[in-house]
Amino acid sequence: MDVVRLFTNLLAVHRQQLQWGLLGEECLRSGEPNYETLRASLQSQVRAEESRRQEDFSYLRYDPERGPRELGQGLESAAQHWLRPERRTAAEVVRCVALQRFVSLLPTHVGDCVLKQCPQDMEEAIYMAEEYLNNTPGDKSLTPPRQREKHPAA
Picture 1 (cartoon, rainbow, N blue to C red):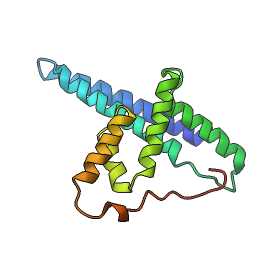
Picture 2 (cartoon, rainbow, N blue to C red):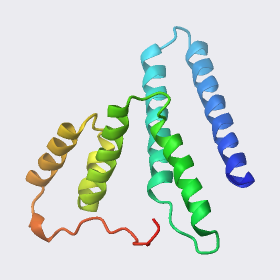
Picture 3 (cartoon, rainbow, N blue to C red):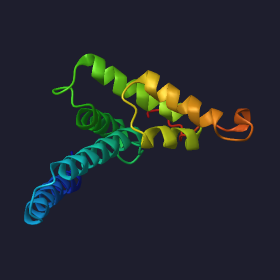
């Protein structure tokens, strides 16, 4: 991992710790602590961080100047940060990868809608996509799937 990325990650962690600390302090200063507000805010921050890590993994591309070794190491590192195998079971890792791939194959606007709702499993994601498509006027067959850059090593 290069020094710039390491430094950026450290800053992000420090910023999160600072935000969480300030949020907790704000709740306590306002008199009676509002644990539901604090919990909801923390859950939102965790989901945003999870989403950012998944995007870091999904959008890595081959850079001819850096070569395949750096791409492979970057993918492995991004996968570790996103999937956190030390905290998740194999089934949970499979669920994350399958959900990410499912959403990437949907039409862009449908995938974005599904992601905003944070599905917990494939059945829920399928239901959300079907509901969106069934409740949106227009010809669904003409909606193009998400287009990703194609690189031989990506």
